[in-house]
Image (tube, rainbow, N blue to C red; front, top):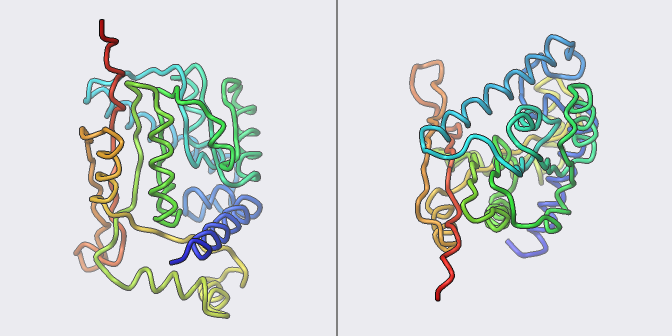
Length: 272
């Protein structure tokens, strides 16, 4: 794929997520019918944010198992969406920075934080990532990279790693390349074949131009090589197998997942 094609692909992906932010922001984060805009009541909204608290509780428990700090000075949530993880992170950090590609998602995240009295969150669009300093002692990203084209995602992983302070911890979730070779042609067809997206949406009883929630798998060996090149060789991997299908067997057309946890090495002591 050429550089121009990669850039065009990334732009189309960003456009799709801006559409989700405009039309269905909560469903764009968790694909359950109760989070669709037409179904989203206060009970569903509270369940949505409880799920974020449960996710952070799990990450904190994981940090405790690994002997890592469970409170932070400065934390970053990449792909923060409407703030599902920002709100519970704000209880454990002096400042939390939420980054997302969709201004509409960020506007909803701002509303979510204000409604819950959270005032230590800074929200930034993804194109401003380069403005951040390398002083984060926690960086998280959960069920986000799977929606980013993998070549772009590898570069973003390298960039996020540079934003860790020495001794800082990253906890990043990735979908892994599935066992079936049919997934990538399927999404290519939806993106490039005229009328394919409209047919797929009609079959799923959606508007013909409803945005595509693209899925992308990552190669674990490539992720680990990139981290090793950045001086990080101690990586803990928590593997999430693909779901069990109706037959009782693992669905090899689905994506498995991996939560990578790693620490940026501390600065070496000054000699002399």
